[in-house]
Image (cartoon, rainbow, N blue to C red; front, top):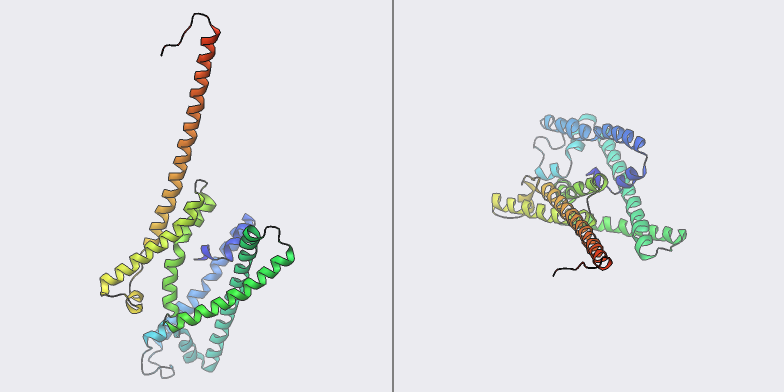
Length: 284
């Protein structure tokens, strides 16, 4: 999913290769602190401390809704550190949310201002106009994020379910992005169509499997339905097929043009010989 992150991709493309390699390795190592700390350490601590009298839900186990809402880490921190643990988790979540939201606002506003507004709407836009478009995009996308979060919460879509769904939505774009940077034969149609078609096919597969396993399609059944790699497979096959078909078509067209030029040159040469040598004729 990092490949499709709108803030990371422009930075990677614009950076020097030497800096990108070191940054990728260091960033990858730093990223391990997040799953190891929240998922492994506090996750296992939450399971082990559920029978502790200081655990917030003692003597009951945590409800499935609380686990899906991401409350395992706060409960474990409260059990271990008391109110200080709750404050530490609150600060951690606040910093993570504000940092991610700020980075996303900057990335989206830059894409809208430079890649859409200046590229297609007003190519002659001045720096002040681009700045204004960026500010409007920042405010608009911020409102959109807040409304979307409220809608998802009202529909009962939790953080865990959102992460599950995000894999199907985002993952089909990984292969086309990789091919765009590494494969010269990929064309624009393959890069744009493959993620969309891969997402649709992956979503259909996910829902069909959920219906086949549980007999109905609901938030509960889809949450318990294991994801397949169909979205990756469809995107990979489509992207490769579209690019290869277009490449072969261009190759055939080039070969046809070359053969046509050769045939015309041959006919011109024969006509020159016929008209230039008395007694020669053309048999029809």
